[in-house]
Length: 232
Picture 1 (cartoon, rainbow, N blue to C red):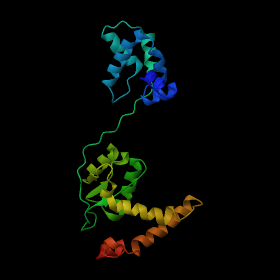
Picture 2: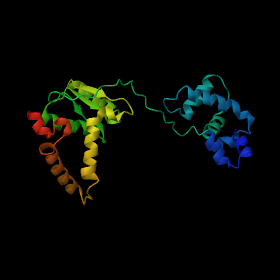
Picture 3: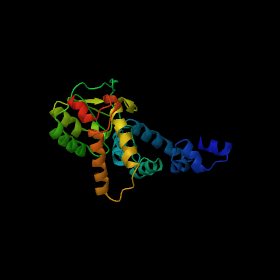
Picture 4: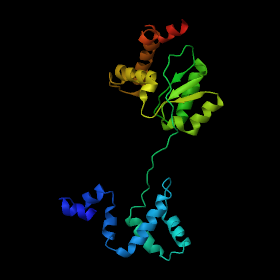
């Protein structure tokens, strides 16, 4: 196929191999017809184990266990030429997520919406701080980020009888409350200032949160600030 592309179009060997996803080094081995059985066997073994790295030694042992008399050097040469040394990335599979209607909670701590971008241990520490101040939520609505799908967060919620409500992948509008908050914070703070240090960032953020929670009217809360709405 690569030869056909080079003959039919003015492309280099590198470009032709890239188009058909063929390692360039393997292209030069195709002229060695006696290596084709090795190539076929390696492809067969690798395709059977796409979810983890197929090491060269493991593949060689499987080949020998089938009674095939190829020597180690030959298998290694073809293995490297095929680019199998580089770990193959696989797409993370997620459980099917059901669409959950976004409703306005009618009571305190009925539902929290969250979005983080740091490891799950940090998420858990922040939640423990929030719980000490506000109490335990009945459920938490989150996306499918690794900080929320890993065992650290899942087990922490299970121990406290907190329901995790995952949104569907690629549907951030299903977590619209936190998405709206993020956008507002980004516009009012992150995009509005050039910070000289972390201390200044924290100081401006605290001032913004004070206004956001105590004074700023929210249309979704009958034009009341969050803390005033909570007390009604």
